[in-house]
Image (cartoon, rainbow, N blue to C red):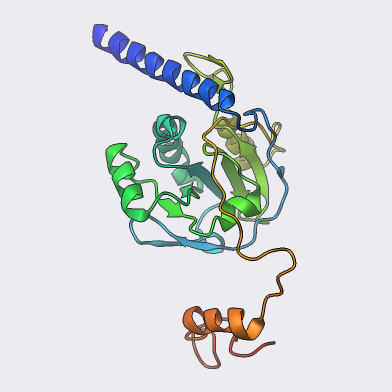
Length: 253
């Protein structure tokens, strides 16, 4: 009993440090943690394929699941680190019910070697950590901070929940235990075929730094100079007549 109490007190102190960190982030002059995400639920997510920290490819529209949950993380983010055990518990509970959990790292400063070290240090296995090298997925979904969860239905590829895992952490305050488990409730309602009662909440996490996109608004992209070489290097080897690609990418059309 004393050991359990000690572990609980240690976890509580760790949560206190996270709340202090949240307060420091707000004082640093960044946008407020209460900012709403750029997009809401019910948006359709286009297909993407990314490699995780173990070198395995994950493609959204080939996921053998009823739902895919993306959780945005970043090396060194204390709030993301504290969330790992919650994600692992959810994965264990919902994997047999057709839910897949992928962690997503969109931080440009985090390389794959560092992500592997972070995974080993905080025992994130068996959760895969996908590297969003171009930050394309974060931009697509309007994610600005780590610790945001995006739940996607594989029936229509639409987001049915986005936001925090639960309400344990909030600006300047915290709870010993969460009063509302937002993601879990959304998954239960979705799997039961019910409307999701709360499809969007505000996630509390570390700010993701976005690099300036290449080119400017007035820059015209050249298919011959910029697009065709990429297709030749990355796509045409499979997407050509008679090969395994499902459509041909060897000409302009």
